[in-house]
Image (spheres, rainbow, N blue to C red):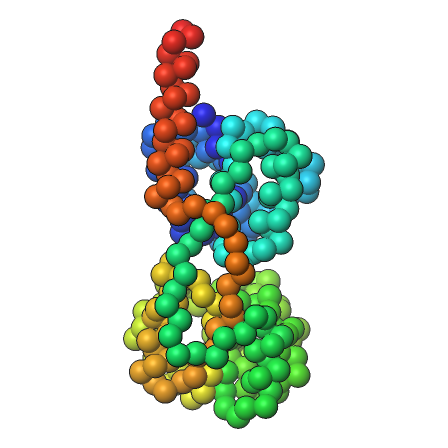
Length: 254
C-alpha cells in the first residue's frame, strides 16, 4: 500500500515509521531541510523536501491510496491545499489531530496581530516562541523588547534581521525545551510576557506554561484553529487495517 503523509511533526514521523515497519511504502513531504533531518532514514520511506505546486501534489496523490495530513495544527494554508488536492484526485484524506492543551490562566488571542496589539500597550520584555514567520505582526512594538526563539537556520535569522531584532535578543536554538530551560531563559532576559501557540504536548506547551507560572511571566496563547479529524491511534489502526486487507488481496491474486 502506498501512503502519502504531509508531515514535519512528531506525529507524522511516528506514523510514517510505524507504517513503514508494517510494510507500507510511505512518501513523506516536509517543508525544510530541518524537517528532513528530523525525519531520518528508513528503507520504506521516501522523503521530499520543499513546497509543492498543485501539479506536483496531484502527481504524488495519483500514486497513493491514502493521504494523511499530519501537518502542524496552525498550518491552515497547507491543510487547505492538501484537502483541495485530494478532492481533485479522489484520494482518501485523513486529518491527524493533535490533542489540545489545558491552557489554564492565560491571555488568549485569535491571531498574532491581536496579541501584538495587546502587548503594544504593556511594558516589559516579550519572549516569542511562535517561530520567525509571525515577526512582522509585532512591527509596532520596539524591537528591543522582543526576544524571538527561533530555529538556528539562515531563513529564521534573516527574518529576525529584517524585523530589526537586535542580535543579542535572538535565541537560536533547536528544541525540545524543558521547563527548567524555559525558566532560565525567562529569568536571563527578564521576560514579562511569553507568547506561544497551543502546540500540545509534542510542541512543549506544558513546559512553557509551567515555566511562565513559576517565574511570574504572563502567558499569551494564540488560539488553535478549529478543525475535524482523527487521533493518532485511530489513524494508525485504520491504516494498518487497510494494509492488512491490501496484503490479503495481493496474496489471493498471486
